[in-house]
Amino acid sequence: MNSSTTVSAELGLRLVVPDRTTVPLLAGLEYAADDPYAIRMAFYVGDDEPVEWIFARELLTVGIVRRVGEGDVEVWPGADDGTLHIALSSPFGDALFEVPLPALADFLHRTYQAVPAGEESEFIDIDAELENLLWPS
Image 1: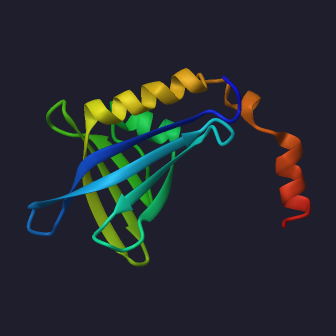
Image 2: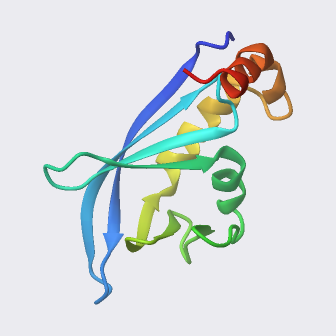
């Protein structure tokens, strides 16, 4: 694969509200080989601009099998085998999402086909990253 490879998906997930009922919503996932450690997830809420969070790919992967994360992001498998929980915290509030595990696992699998685990550094353009740090545009 080359560094311009991208993987994307749309997931239907559920926002868990305080009374434990759920509200369905849509999230877009995007992975780019030239940013191999990150997965961008855009949450579409109503007609507003999507709310975007950036997750470590490894965090979502490990979260499939055990609770992981601290601070702003926590991920853990549900009691059944079909759900993954993602808890987000920010100065603007907290949110808990129930994500369909098969769809997320398929997306993650495709990211590892694009950039295998342990080979992420081969997809980073170090010269471009240094240039951005030293001479931001």
